[in-house]
Image 1 (cartoon, rainbow, N blue to C red):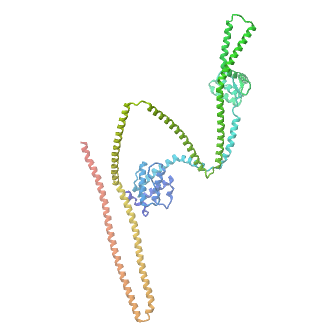
Image 2: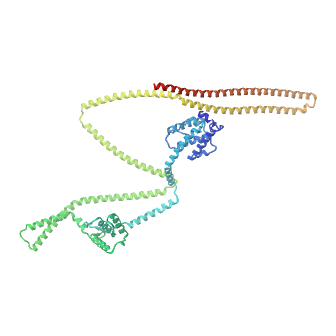
Image 3: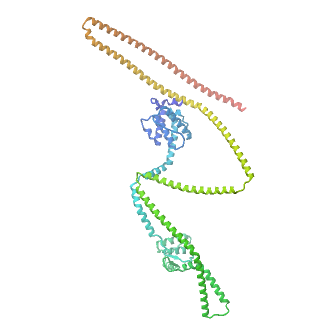
Length: 612
C-alpha cells in the first residue's frame, strides 16, 4: 500500500479530519508529539491545532533550530490551503536532502501524514536540535546575561558602582603608603662573596635584616627562601646567640659599604662618576712625573722638590681646566638645543593635558546627559564616531600611499621620457600591439560563439526541465487525486445543501398552498352554508382539490420508486466495480510474484552458462 493509501488512517488536515488513525499510526503520532514536547516545541499541546499543523510545524521548527544552512525557504502557516501545504512539503523534502538526513521523506508522505515515515525523521532532527542546544547553551546564556546587564542593573551592581571609586582610591593610598622604600644604596667597590650575601645586602638596602637559619646543604633553595621570609617577618628566634652576634657583625660590615639615599653629602661614587673620564689623565700625569724624576741627575732638596711638584700640579690642573672649558663649549650648544626641545615638549604636554582635561570634563558632562531612553542612540553615536575616526585614519594612510605612488610613477615617467628611443623596441612594441589587437578580436569572437552556445544549452535545459520526470508525474498524480477527493467532498456537501434546500422549499410551497386552501374554505364556509346551491358548489370545489392532491401524491410516489430503483442499480454497479478492483489487485500481485519467480529462474539459468 502506498503512503497516500496508508494515510487513509491519518487524522489530520487539508480536508481529512473525518478519517480515523489505525493503531500503529496513532502510536507513532503520540510518540512524535512526545518527542516534540521533549525538544521544546510546546505548540504541540494546543488542542485546537490539527495533526498536520502540529507535526509539520514541529518538522519546520526542528529544521530551523538545527542551525544548518539549507538555503531553502521553509514558510509554515497554520490552517494553510492545499497549495501552500504542497509547497511546504517540497521545501521540507529539499531541506532534509541538503541536511544529509539518513531517512528519505517524500512530499506526498508529508501531505498524507505518514507518521511511520515521519517518526524516524523527527527523531533524527530532535537529536540534532538537542546537540545544537548543548553546544550553544552557554553562549546563549552569556549573551542573554550581557543583554540584561546592558539594559538593566541590579541594586547590588549600583551599590558596587557607588563604593567602587572610594575603594579604588583607598587601595591606591594603601599601596602607595606601604610601597618599598629604599633607605641605603651600595657602593660600586662593595663586593659580595656569594649569592646569599647579595640577597642580604639587597634586603639591607630596604631596611630588612635576614638572619640565616641552619639548613642542610641539599636544601639550599629552601634556605634562601627562608632567609627572605625571616627578613620580611623579622623573626630570629631560631638562631643561637653566637650565630646572631656573627650575623650582626656581618650586617655592620655591609652597612659600612652603603650610603644613605637621602644624604646631601657628595659620596666617593659621585666624585668618581663626575671625574671618571679624567682618570686616565691623572695616571698619565703621574707616570710622566715619575719618569722625569728618574731621569733627573741632580738631586733636589725637599723645598725645591715641593715647588717643582706644586708647579707641575698647577700646570696639570690648568691643562685640565682648559680641556674642561673646551668640552663645556662643545656640549653647551647641544644642551641649549635639548633644553629648548624640552621646553617645547613641556608646552605641548601642558596643552595636551589641558585639552585632555577639557575632553574628560565634556565626556563626564555627556555621560551625565545619558538616560535609559537615549542610551541606545548614544551607543550608536559612539560607534559611528569610532567608525569616523577609523575612516579618517585610513584616509590619511591612503593619501600617503597615493602620494608615494604618484611620486614613484612620476619619477618613472621622467626616466622613460629622458631615456633614448630604441627603434627595435618601438618595432617590437608595434608588433606586440598588433598581436594584442588580433588576440582581442579573436577573444571577442570566441566569447560571442560561447555565449550563443550557452544560450542554446540553457534553452535545451529549459525545455528538458519542462518535461516532468516519473517521480514528479507520480507526485502530481497523487496531488491531483487528493485535490479531486477534496473537491468531490466539497461538491457532495454542497449538493446535500441544495437538495435540503429544494426539499424544504417544496414543503414550504405545499404548506403555503394548504394554508391558502384552508383559509379560503374557512372564509367561504359561512357564506356557502346559507343556501343549498352555494353549499353544493363548495363541496364540488373541495372534491376537485382532493383529486388534485391525490394526483400530486401519486406522482411523487412514482418518482420515489424510480429513485429507489436507480439507487439499487447503482449499488449493484458499485459492488461489481469493487469486485473488479479486488480482482485487479489480486492479479497484479500474482503477476509481480510471477515476475520475481521469473527473474530468479533466469538467474539460475545464467549461472551454469557463466560457469562454462
